[in-house]
Amino acid sequence: MNSDTENHGFGAVLKELGLKETPKRRVMLEILAEEQRFLSPEELWLALKGRFKTIGLPTVYRNLEELANGGVISTVIHPNRQLYYYFCTAESGHHHHFICTSCRRVEDIPECTVAAMEGEIVTRTGGKITSHIVQFNGFCRHCLADPNERTAI
Ligand SMILES: [Zn+2]
Ligand SMILES: [Zn+2]
Ligand SMILES: [Zn+2]
Image (cartoon, rainbow, N blue to C red; front, side, top):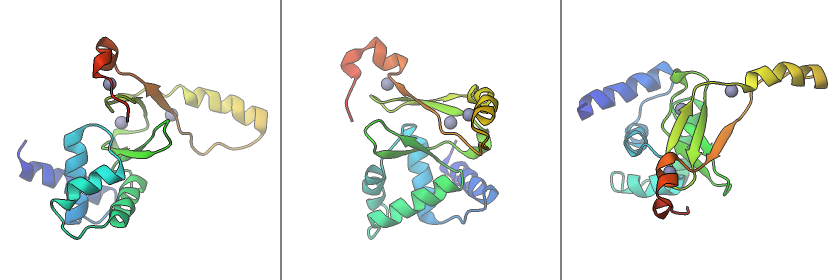
């Protein structure tokens, strides 16, 4: 895929989700999609500073939040309590993630068995469930196979 196709792709995704396409947002998506691992806002900021000399960390935080709220990227809540971001659009439908806390790979878990629990919870509490957050943390098969590859973040 050449970069023109990629840029066009990101523009279409942003448009689809009702978000304005800006050069900063496009480059953020390029970096996240290329990396294929979850990144912290600070890491993205360092990568962006090479392209946009005057970009500030608050701008990066704001754009990441807007992209995540818009469903273009997804958030990773690490056990270390730091928030990370990963390129996965809401267009792929409701699913969950298995994250490797060592190498930061993310695998899609398409089955959602949590939905089955919701009926029981509603019956028990008399409330109404509007959403749920489920993320599986651990080590991917690559890191399990070679523990020397593991790195703490
Ligand atoms: Zn791993
Ligand atoms: Zn995903
Ligand atoms: Zn679910």
